[in-house]
Figure (cartoon, helix red, strand yellow):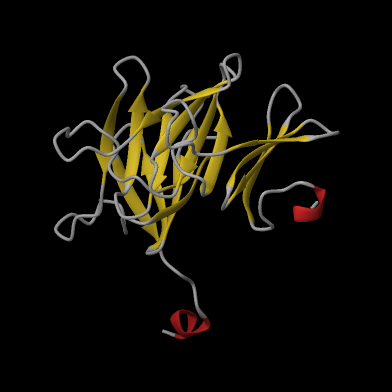
Length: 195
């Protein structure tokens, strides 16, 4: 599937098949929904506050309620309402310490407790509380060896024991939700084996 088939752009950055069977594609020129027959493209519209906040999409996930969450480059986090086909936006605000930590969202996942985790490019890891619609932040701190290893978060997943694994530009981190501390996984090399 390419531009010739109706894609807005050939670079697909992320994919997801939702619980309804739709395939979602994040591109650098919009979010695409594919139903097996045709494509529907969602783009940012400057005169529509309920449109996608930015055309470059890096991350997509669906939560347990069937809500689609979309991470964008500079437009923050978007929540998609499938009934109205409108987007709500969660952005960084310098005046609000409980807002999203950075507007470039690279990774999103929901854990078994229903908590939404959002990885940003430069702002670290965010935990979203859907009741208060506020974010808690986990960032790298040079003075804390149990902090996130780097604030550029590229991937997030949860293992079978409920531990969160966070991939960053500075390596892999395991987050313990009980202690709220990170442990860092060091790169194994043949040089290290010789020491």
